Image (cartoon, rainbow, N blue to C red; front, side):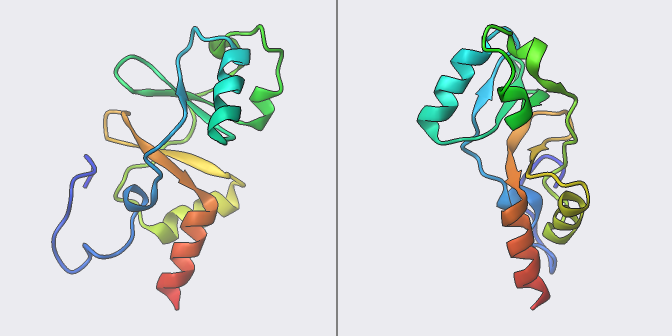
Length: 134
């Protein structure tokens, strides 16, 4: 489960962070200019970018606050470093509770070694948690 691989057993059908995470994620590297990232985000309709290294390990996030910074800054200068990341096996309910409590709109889902699997949006986690509670 920690590696995001399929599972078996009676709890295998329970929705988990890795199942709900969107795999199409806008990413960027530390040395890119913020203006260049904004152009890509606008074209894709995304409002957040995950900062990764060459091995796809999560280093930081660019959310609305960071994206409003001056465009000549590099991603390294503008990003929020060390975002909270979660493993793919965390339940939808746990994710929904955490994201609501901490007012997170999205959170990276990573493997045990920090490699990006996808981005989980709070709306998706809350919707799935409510479905499971019904």
